[in-house]
Image 1 (cartoon, rainbow, N blue to C red):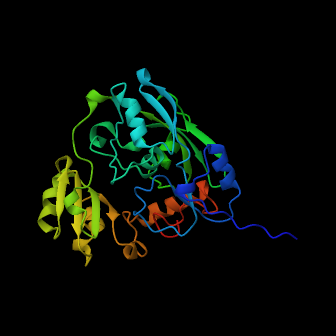
Image 2 (cartoon, helix red, strand yellow):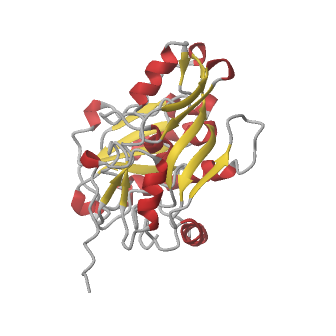
Image 3 (cartoon, one colour):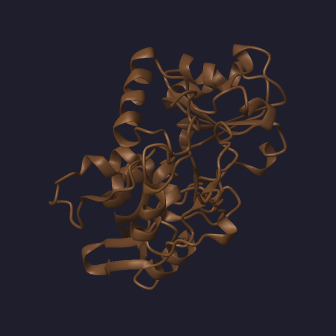
Length: 306
């Protein structure tokens, strides 16, 4: 009897998948978990995933663009720089202005992580601007939900639900989004301040803006306010208790925090995401089982055993 060959390891540098169908076939034949990754600009957020890496970078290109209807569709591995250059030719912008974290992220990565910029307050987060998506579930099925216009609401909530799941529920392969005239843009910073980046721990904190002054009085490390206090960047040299834990500080102010920078040794033991209540954690596990019953996609990336 011929011995089966070991499963190949796919890396972003050698991504062989140039069509959603090819990637779906790969997923259907998997017998092990995988790490799903785009450009890797946010690879340092979340528990490390100990699994072969499958990249979406081969899925690149704008699939449809209707400037007069303010609608654009692109494969998940398309870089934001490519999309923005196309939009600029028509004086259009991405509504959600995502932070780059020093790189050139993919559209799929932006939607999957749902980290938006200063436009969020008036124009919404990435998920608020998604009209439709094609995605691969944990069984390797290539599915579609939503559409190309706002009126088409069939399956509309599925793409929004996948946004912010960090690749733990499905692999986004194509996304249709709303775009807007450049005149709607608001000049506000969305990137983490360079001055904070030297600290070992950096949190991105969203809180009611009237709580920013209160946090500023008690936070022992560096702190920078943006969006009139609605977005805070907190830095610390170490975590010695709740007073130096951005998650605890955010929860106490009625908000939430994402640990965007931390040592690997810390990420191996602690979640970078805001802790969930027992009820929300149970719902998260149910969603995981529904979309990815075998636990193939980014296992444990956001929360342990999810």
